[in-house]
Image (cartoon, rainbow, N blue to C red):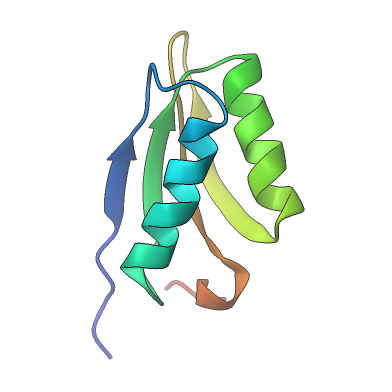
Length: 85
């Protein structure tokens, strides 16, 4: 089995709801088994994106918030490997 390559999406400065839409479009484009590493603005914007993704059954992991950015990994629930080791 080959390891999937994580893709990155930089969205700092992108307004809502465009940032959320771009994340969903990128996940659709990537297809199965490819997690997406995302960087968005921190604060309320970032928290709203996380809530929206989770409410639509996306799995969000590896969340790191700093003063100016929120980084996380997102994938569709069926695309997440339950045993990443």
